[in-house]
Length: 396
View 1 (tube, rainbow, N blue to C red):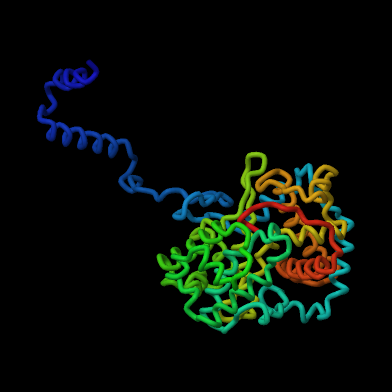
View 2 (view 1 turned 180 degrees about the vertical axis):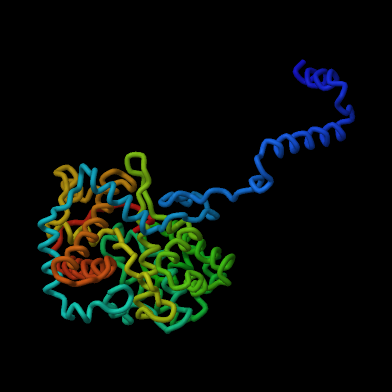
């Protein structure tokens, strides 16, 4: 048989040692001597480190232990640009971009020199302390991470739940019980305790998923960051880009992406908004002192594409427009949904560039997002916007 062939081959070479251990030693020394003699000099006989990955390559976080080799925000920009360039359901009107940039410039109350402040030319937002918790310390980071773990998909509640109710309910609970967001309590939370944490009343949509995501936050903070979101923030060393990457590495629920025509498209909406919230709450100082805040993109959600469409920036195909107008849900990860979100990211990038080139106003994409979102909230409340697309998802 095949196993006996090796024995016969070894026995035929009577010059080799016959004991297995001696034979293996003899063979190893022979191989080493042969290799050494084939090398021109001893200096060349060295071990080289593995080659570094090519610039732009990345591991796309299929398990918690993997790390990004490329900037997560570069991935957002390049992948959404690819979708926008080939989209068949959504397009961007360049002329409307210029008009909207002019409108935003006209609404800017600060001069360009005042607007070009710290954080890469970013204008500091006014943090809404009426709605949000803020104590100037670690509890604020804990609050914001839990808030942004829950910050998605309010529309199935038909208006009874909106972001402000979530943020203010969580704030009240934290003021009443400073230990309510401890990592150990988050890790063991259930539906009834989460409902109470948010102020009671009718339940948020997708409660089982929200419970899972909050438990995930608790588990990760206990395992990696001494139970504190502030330690997660500090571990980024003042880099917004690094913090987005750390959040996505540690928390699978924040790994916001889709597959578009066989390729990955990245958005990282809630990871980015957590970083932006830290920056805004701390006014760019202390925990929020990120030197590269301008690297953030906009946060692809419902409201910003809704207002961009109303301004003529985002154009939908007739079939997609009918489905949105008829309140027909758009499937998460579908071509239509990926194109809406990708074109929204690219449209805001174009607006940001137009503000800089045409109006000498240098603000980052996150600031453009905040302006558009606030305008959208006001117009939606007044009933001045068309319906937004509806997608059942945990990402936004």
